[in-house]
Image (cartoon, rainbow, N blue to C red):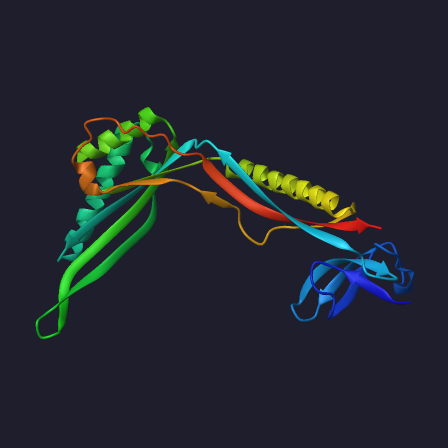
Length: 266
């Protein structure tokens, strides 16, 4: 008997490792599930046993796009200090960070919520007229991040306090959603819905009948989230805002794709 196997990858170089509901290879029936091993990629694939010919299939992709209103503001601060003396440079940097933590407490935010994301200390050099490079002090930077509920009053309160303290830190603000997992579920559900709709549309246009859903391909890439960011350099903060910032963040957009593989009924 002649057998063919359908899977998401080309079927040459496959070895059969397992098949369900049967004890011998000769007992395989059409549409029995088999586990295939691809000798070139060394990966496992689930396949379907075909007897007497190839299965006709249709692959349809669906792109899910979901938008959501931001419910958190992400504040990213950067403190920078320069000094010829290493100890003085670190002391100046720590003073800025401590002033920022005090600002958070003044705004009613737990100072422990302000987390370090990056800390760097670089040695500076400068060029002389004869081409030599000589030591020119140190530059230290400390980047910190904190998430707060998106509330215009709270956000402006933090901005006013940081500006009045004149710590000299730079600030960028982005907006996101706290429960990204729920948004991810919505995106995947929408992607499957779109793919099924596309499959029905193509089948009607081609005059064919969709059969069993054979496979769902997903998981090669992460869901993409698109967030807006606004940046305020340290010099702008130090000038002190005379008015509250009127912030209306755009909706957060997330997207991903899935591929559905249907059998075409005879």
